[in-house]
Length: 156
Image 1 (cartoon, helix red, strand yellow):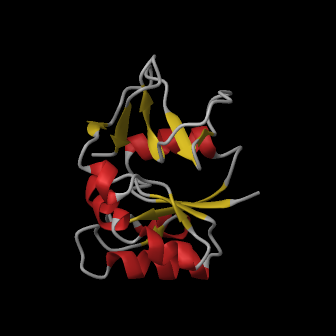
Image 2 (tube, rainbow, N blue to C red):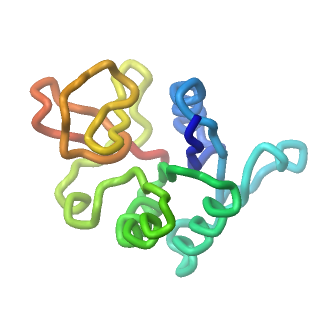
């Protein structure tokens, strides 16, 4: 089973994503939020997404824990990692978010409700739904009924 590092893991939206992904990936839960001592062993501490060393710190954690994927859920984390995707790929780690060019054109939805069907695109394939079509999207979000537009889902 592939290993996925999930950021913003202490937030409610991330907990919902954890439930969706737990049977598909071995999950590593990471957060930049304060964590009570009793839960410290459940979460890996990472810096805030706006931190200048964020990408390098997340890369170090992903390498240390042998992660195959990184799924950033915070918008600031996505913005930072979208500029560093090539760096991660050099180490065989796939960052699951749009690239810089696509990111500026996408709509963003914070904390989508559980009634909305989420999609997680990896290499153009939706791993959460049994859709065999190939898409040009990368990351977590909502796909329009026509399949022609993608809304990026983020944790707030």
